[in-house]
Amino acid sequence: MGLFKGAAKAGIAAKAIQVVRREAAKPQNQAKAKELFAKLQNRRRPNGTPPANRPL
Image 1: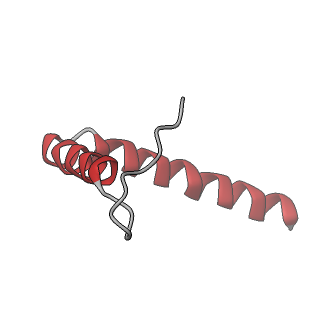
Image 2: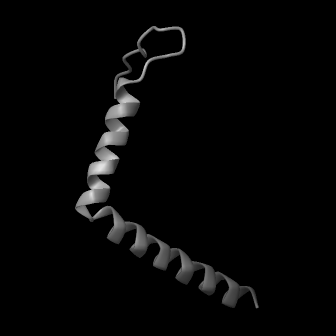
């Protein structure tokens, strides 16, 4: 029984990954993602100081 559950979960996960990749490939979703990342990078801390620069 455990083998079937594992196979079913793997199939569901694979399908979810396909959907995410398909949605991420759409230009309008790419634009939204770029806006979100720019917004997150430019936001400031609540006390007004800019976020610390961390090396990658």
